[in-house]
Structure formats: structure tokens, C-alpha cells
Image 1 (tube, chains in turn yellow, purple):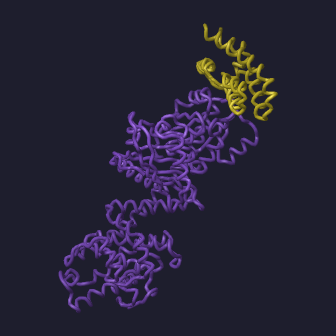
Image 2 (cartoon, one colour):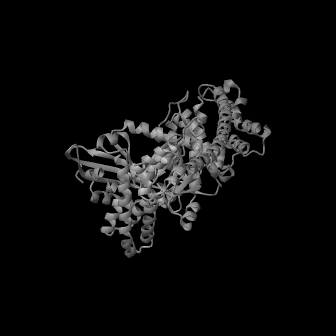
Image 3 (cartoon, chains in turn yellow, cyan):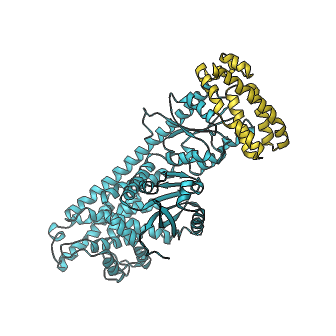
Length: 117
Length: 512
């Protein structure tokens, strides 16, 4: 799997990220590092335990990281949940969580597949 | 330190996401040294230690512990914001957030997603701008410093010439100057009758070194006669005040306050408050305050110095003789100042006078620099600080005690090397109340009790003595903490931290 195919699988924008970071090596490095970023897990657990502030910060970080890596799809859903948590609309945030989980799973799977080669 | 052209700049990256820090590091590490902070509290702790080394802060807004705005508040509170530029980096694009950040002093704003070219450009532009400003500030300071240094040097040379002819050591003039300034500072706190301020005190201090300049007109045989003067010789000797006054009248800078004070001092430093002095027999407040203070300093130094006809008296003896009225008559308020400054006088007179001279220049320059807000943390102030730090480091290396400092915002405990070694703690501990290793040494209850006692102190009575039981090296031990609260110069003063020492109590004698 090429890095372009990986971006296609996670529904991101490879052209865009390459334009900003200038080197494929850097994009690859951050892409692989994304798997060890704890913010998604933190978002999930803090949503479960009702720690809303913690959840907001985790969502916010996840959103920032996805944005930096041009993970367009994951950015979109993490942005929405961040705004719901910011406005303290916790019901909405709860409804949005499954989409974030699905997008994260899709992203992580694509990266793992890329990594596996 | 800020003018080195070859220096690699250091950037502090404060972001709670490891990913984001890594991305920024990759973009910048080729040209800059990077320090990372995982949250606001760490960022402030790092700034606390190295604000002079950091050329730029890249600051995230949403962070745990202290967020970006809290960091900016701290940077404003400690004036770091004046010299350390901040660029906000955040996924926050809300207008009010950005506006608030600018209001709090950030220089620029980089929004996500990061673009390598934009990040590098903004960083270099900001650093260059500030570096230029710092270089200019350093140049201006260097000039002020040089000027002050030459001024002091000239006065010092002149007064040493006078002393040389008197066969006295040059220490006498320096002592007079030191003591004059101590007494005037004390007087300034007591009354505004004489409209004293730092600048005036500085001028009178400088002028005091000329008090005996008239002695160059006295024949050597009289001036340096061992043993008692005959009445005729004493009459000749007394002429030195009038001669000094004439000299000061003869110099061309009559509008200069320094010359005015030097004139007063030369002329009337042998007057007495009761009117029985010379040359004019002035009474009480007819004697200018400059001359009154120098007269007292002169008498004290004569008593505590060895002369051909007498040994040196101790500080206590000299004080007793003056208060007893055995050596002249002085204004009661001035005698109060003498008594209250007694410790300070004893301490300052013992300091190596060359060192003191240098320190004095720095203090004065620092004052001048402080009057100009733009130069607030420039080189001169730093030298003074550096000197103080060196002194502290030296003294703490001699001490067997565990010395510590604590700042409240951010909550941070700092230990000196001896304490690090003895207690096995880090040099700096952020948020010690929740630090496992600190808690092993001192329980929450003990810390709370100590904090409570410190809360109850005041700037006038800042000291607290506290005993507690703990363990060290696996064995029970009893400790004594002697510390005092530290207060800000604000009005009203704010309780900002603690300095103190911790001592292991040996044996059973401490039971209270």
C-alpha cells in the first residue's frame, strides 16, 4: 500500500498535507506516530465516565492532530464533537461519539495496513 | 548574553499533544533549540527558570492544568511578556479567543493545520524583531553603565587623593559614603520633611566623598601631626571646612545639585545640632540635612577606625558613645535612624569595599534602567541578579542545611544542591502538594498546617518556625523548618512565595 492509497482509505487529503509539510518522509513519520496518540482513547474513556472537561480537551486535541495530518473525515467528526462538548451539549456529544469511533477505526485500520507492508 | 550573534535561539513549545509538539519540532529543530512543555504549568515553570534563554514561546490554548490564557497571565504578571514573544498555535479559530490572546500580548497567531513555510517565517520574523530590540536595549544600557562607572571612578580618585595626603586609607571615604546612604534611606522612610528620593540620596552619597577636600589647603605638618593639637594648630585645622566650601564655590558647575550638596557638606559637616560646632555655629535645622548626616557618619567612622592616638572602638561602643552625646550633638530623628540601621551598618561596613563599589554602580544603573520601562530586564539588571545568585549559590554550598524556595504561582518548590542530595528530590518540583516523593517526606496535613501558618504572616512579620516528624533514609527523623513568606512590591503586597531552610533535629532535645 502506498501512502497515497493509505490516505485514500482513511478519506484524507494527501496532496494537502504534502503541500504543508513538504516531505513525504515527514508525513510518513507523523502518520505512523498517530497510532500512539492517546487522545482518542482518552476521549472514549472520559465520555464513559462523564468527565466532560477532559473529554473536551481530548476531542480538541484529536481534532487538531487530524487537521494537521489532513485526515479530512476524522477531522470533520472530531470537530463536531468538540463543538458539542464546548457548548456543553452532552446529549449531542453522546450521539456524535459513534461516528468519531467509526472514523477513528477506519483511520487506524488504514495506517496499520500501510504500516504492515 | 543577549548580544551573541552566533547564538542558536531557543523556542519553548507548549502543547499538550505530543503529536503537535513533534510536528513543530520537526519543522524547527534544524535551526533552533526546542524545549517542550506538556501543559501550561510546565511552560510557566520552564519560563521561571530560563526566561532569559528563551527567544520565543509557541503556545497552545487548550491545555490541562494551566491553559494558554493562564500562561499569558503569568507572563504578564512576571513581565516576561515584554521580552519573550509569544505566538499562539491553536485549532481555536473563534474570533473572541484570538482577540483575547492579542490583548494579552501575543505577537502573532498560527492556526492549524500547520504549514511548514508559514511556521518558519513567522518564527524567524518574530525572533529577529525581538533580537533587534534587545540589542538596542543592551547598547543603551552599556552606555549608561559606562557613564555611571566613570563618574564614580572620578569621584573616587579625587577623594583618594585627599585621603592620601591625610595619610588615611581610602576606606574612610567609602565608609562615609556607605553610611551616609544607609542613614538617608532610613530617614526617607521616616519622614518626607527633606524630600529625599533615591536620586537625591545617590547624589548626597557621592558628594559626601568630598567632605574633607578642604584639607588639601592645610599644611602637612599640622595635618599629619601625631598627638594633640595646640589651640593654634586646631584653629588652622578647623579652617578645612571653610576652605572646602570655597573650593566648591569656585568650581564652574554651580547649578549642579552634586556641587550644591558638596558645598553644604564641606562647609558644615563639623556643625553640631546644639549650635556648638564650627565654622558658623549653626543650630538645629539651619544645618542642611546633607551635612547633618555626613557629620554623623564621620564621627562613627572616626570612632570605629584606628588612629595614631587611639585604637578602634567596637560598633557597640561607638554607638553607645554617640547616643550618650560624647561625640557631638545630633538631631534625635537621625539618632533613631542610626539605631534602627545598626545591623545594616555593621554588615555593610564589613563588606569588601571594592565589591561594594561595583555593586553600587549596578544598583544605581539598575534604578536608572528601571525608570525606563522599555529596558526593564536588560543587561544591567541581570548583572545585579547574577551577582545575587552567585552569592546565594556560594553561601548555600557552605551550608549543611537544606535551603529551599517556593513560588505560589505556579506552585513550584526549588531546592539547592545540598537538599537535592539529602532528600533525593528533584531540583524543581512542580505542584509539590501532589508530588508523591514530596508527600513521602511531608504529609498533606503537615503541609497544610505549614501553609496555614504562612498565610497568617505579614510583610512585617514573615517568619515561621515549624517542626514535623518524618523519615529519612528509612529511619524516623524530626525536622525543623525556618522560613519566611515573600511579598510582592505591589500595594497592598501580595504573598508570592516562601524562602527557608530545613534542619534535621539531632537527639531528643527538641520536644516542643
